[in-house]
Amino acid sequence: LQPDDASAQLRLARVLAWLGKAEAGSRLFSRSTVAALMAAEDHTAHAFVLFAIGQTREAARVIENLRARGDEGPRLTLQLAHIYAARDNWAAAIPLYLQLLRTKPADGHLNKSYGMALLARGRHAEAVEPLRRASEALPSDGAAGLAYARALKGANRRAAAAREFRRVMPMYARDAPVTREFADLLLEQKQYAESARHYKQAVSLGLVDVRLYLGLSGALQASRKPREALPFLEQAYRLAPTRRVGLELARLLNRLGDNKQALAVLDALPSANAAF
Image 1 (cartoon, helix red, strand yellow):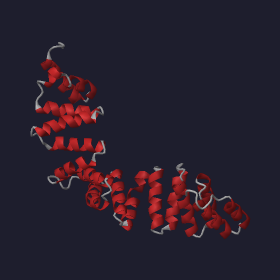
Image 2 (spheres, rainbow, N blue to C red):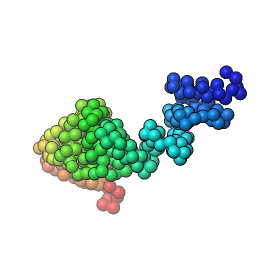
Image 3 (cartoon, rainbow, N blue to C red):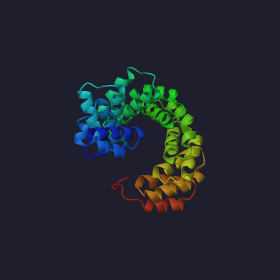
Image 4 (spheres, rainbow, N blue to C red):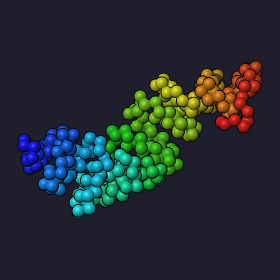
């Protein structure tokens, strides 16, 4: 390969891109002498290898230039949408996903991407339908199902959210934060026994979190298991010795007949003006 043979370098860049050797292909595509010979499909390949090596800003610039010249094929549009999403530029990504869905409304992956983009913007009610389609089209895709459950919860459809959480939880059996998230929802639904079970699972997975311990304590107390709740509320107070948590602990100790310890907790409480 001659160093000044731009045509041969372009052919090699195409082969490298096809083989998935993105970094080497990108270096060749980026040479000005090679770029001068590149057709639209070469610029497309260049954008894809740039994305593969994490140069999303440059990849977006290449695709935007192609689209400005009239090349608005679905493959390019989808790649640009993914690039915007990867950069949290949801305002730019959402219209592109919607544009693609107009021609492929049943596509599970497109519905997933579109719905998750809406979810990232806090548009829960709008995200429900595309994520429902994604969940149904991709039943083994845990991320689609979890996003659907979160959209339902955010849209205040908590019973439906709980059903979808139950469906996907086997895929997240080792994920402590998701397990805690489901337990929180169950607690809101006053399903105390099931909530406590999932909180305990999150604890067993190693999650250490004030909200977790408070939730577990609350679920156990609501299940009429105040003594079992006590160590978790004590742990919450050790992690966050605030007035609010201390008062809850004192009330529980008093309920259990340990008035001396309850008074000791009250005496040690921060002042009412302290930050909770």
